[in-house]
Length: 224
Ligand code: CTP
Ligand code: CA
Image 1 (tube, rainbow, N blue to C red):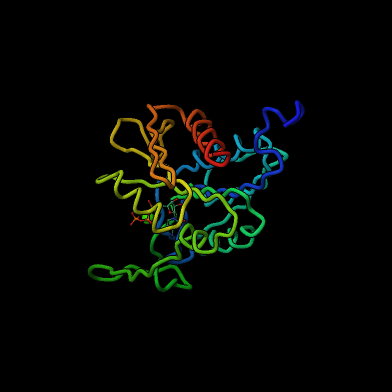
Image 2 (image 1 turned 45 degrees about the vertical axis):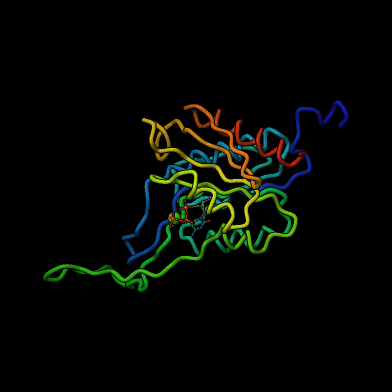
């Protein structure tokens, strides 16, 4: 590395990041979703661009924007749209991070007109969405692939299971146990697990700080 690229360890790398929730339509005005704000994915994108990468950020519906010449933001709504966007860009990707809170299920039937209420209870039939991260793991050729895991029990074992099942190079475990960590909030507490099951635990930090920690670990793992 010469002095010009020093401090830009991701120069020449193409990075793909998913962020935010997905919205799964029930009818023209209703959807199933979750409380993900998208902040973690956007911070990871910003940091990657600052470190020299060309970034494609595929985001579900969020109240965030990003102005960086090296970040291309693709806004999607549903898991299927996120899946399609990721697959379109995966072949030329060097590092992919799935930080999105993708809905595992979607309504099996989407009503064309707004659903009217009827007597009694409503039962909505759900079908499985594609697992984006799993499909990227199966299609992996040269990519360094990172997932997130959000667990409320057996945290480490579940995260390790996802790492192996989805053919990942690393997984970031999001701990919800500590106050202020995880979804929606401004802070996160993470554990970084690499594919050799090396484990590094971090303290409660702001999401920009967590993004820096994650990139430091990924860059170290790539060079190891
Ligand atoms: N993920 C994905 N597509 C899905 C579901 C999950 O890309 N349809 C990704 C998430 O972005 C995350 C990782 O898979 O990086 C783990 O998501 P998580 O919800 O914790 O795990 P799941 O495999 O969906 O298992 P479960 O929800 O049953 O714990
Ligand atoms: Ca899930």
